[in-house]
Image (cartoon, rainbow, N blue to C red; front, side):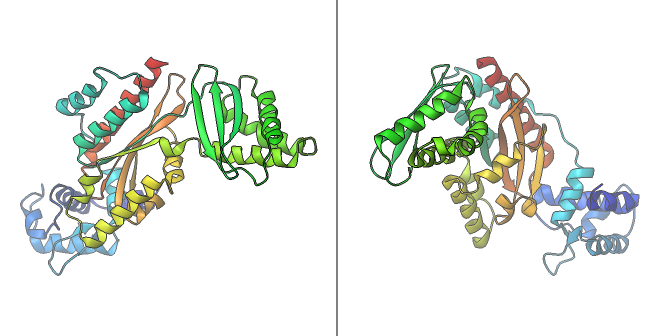
Length: 353
């Protein structure tokens, strides 16, 4: 049980209702909620002074904060986490939201990336936030690997898959490479392929290099390891689709907040922190909510992320969809949208395969 859950269990009915009303009012209007406002909405008729005392207790517990001199309160990050975990009422997906998402499936292009780009744009439009779509890795068995020299400091690795798919990736080879080291490295890898996927091959390469290092020319070993580093990127730079950046930049954030949001998107576009996002897809099925500093990737911008992995027909996680927005998100509406989009994308990928 989290600390937030313990606090919720220990609160009496009045404190719980005051807390819930403050958070719901803040999420709806973005403004501090005062005691006079609550006297008109609470199910129990109590005085404004009584409500102020309850709010002071909630502030002492770290659940509410006073942003200004006024008596109004807003939830803290801990308060938002407690609300999301224990009091959030997730609504049903609205029919018009469903229709907008379903419309992306009409006239499906052959290119899955182009289709997922449309899904990302639709998700951003429906939620008025910024969307993230992590496209699937290509996991068909490999058929052939080849290294091509493009100069002293650049080389190309060509991956040919059994299903006919071809990928080319640039990387920096070790100094002093020769045509013979290129051939030796390719021969070594092709001997290991044997119908393995890229992930499976990556798993056995390091062991084989260590075991057979004396048999492999030093330059060829370096070339293989450089290629391994390129494969560790898994084409991630091309896998993350970010749409709707302007929805956050055009919001109500102050100058400092806007700078932090720009920094977040600059990092995503440069793919500096993409490993952070990739890790979120490996945490299991279902929608997850990260608020503010709970995830390093979004801590500086003070944003929240609602994210869900999607699966292929074998129930294997192959990608993710998510929405970034201010911590004042309408979580009850966003969660079913992200969940439905993840299911939609998973079905799309499974049907195509």
